[in-house]
Image 1 (cartoon, each protein chain N blue to C red):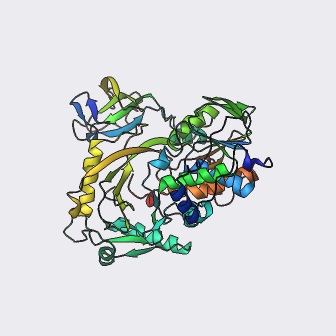
Image 2 (cartoon, rainbow over the protein chains, first blue to last red):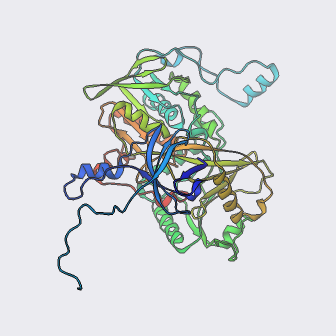
Image 3 (cartoon, rainbow over the protein chains, first blue to last red):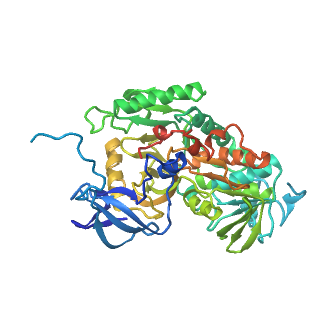
Length: 102
Length: 428
């Protein structure tokens, strides 16, 4: 792969980016069985063909984004999308244990 | 399992190579006997080996030579030695970090040292000495650790200082003014280089002479499993039934395992290498720098062979890239500034099947009769003979020999990982 298109910065050399891994659902650490947890840690699809994966533009805008890439030719397709790692409303926010300063 | 009289199947056995034979051929200009023969794909074999690289062919050779099992087919979708066996940088060493790893690779070095005589084929093994450079305190500490583990296993390995390095490699910049000063090195005198194609051809010739069928241009398209037991493979040239199927396919290993429904913790990464124009011999030792992600050796033809770490993302692409060459050239010149005018001839990539602990996976799988010899990552070529010998013993005895017992697929589920990342020749 030579060029990767960042949604913010446009096409850049791949050496500017860090690979963020394929999109895998993490099992809940509280009730995952050891087997589920080991599968999550070690097993990857290793697809030969199109994959959807996360990249990080570390030498540019420092945004995570999602790319579709063919692992045989290293071509990418579709405009990449920035990943919102910090949603505006955290879904499981606990109420504070005590009131803070007034 | 062996069928009697298989050694003569499908034609005459090729003659032994000798000086007298060479002179006689030179004078008479007779055609050379092909090193291995072409066969029809038979419907039944005792063992089917998928992947015609050094691992698959060595396994076939030792099955026939050590255990008398010669009704074996080696299937390759391209030509033999066209994958990792023809794309590696042909460096041999046994200075690993874990005792299991050191024992295993030392056995491989033993086999490599006697391989030319064993196969009656010149594999051009050259003992050159192997230097792993340390550029900081942390790596110097790892070198001392490795040296002590190596010595305990009887492997010649020691930590040396910059003066000794300069004596071994006069062109190296060991000054304190370097961007990454060389503080010391792990010196492994038995390390060296070999002609990798010759190893593949030698094993192919030896296996063929003992009755093994080598099928090139034969792609495996499916694996038949019935009641948890493997029954055969489907190929682009028709189906083959076999009670034992061995997967030796390196970068493509997960694709084959998927056909049998076996999940393995392997990801495929390309590793790039490059070679320069040939120059007069000046570099005897193999020089490796983990911090600079580069290893350098000079072949018998005079070319400098450069290798690097694996690319930082998984891919099946075997094309070289410009940013790799830029980084590599900078790092080589950091070590040996006088190479600045040397031109690169070509670059390529090979596929490495990386495991989470940087150690291979050898032995049985949950599917009865389906064995794997995969996950070699960046160490595959130097382990070819010993893994072939061990996998042949596994097939013959029905269970892995003690030498490879720690490398089973079950170690991931049981949490017995064998961390070899510290002995990876370059950082990953």
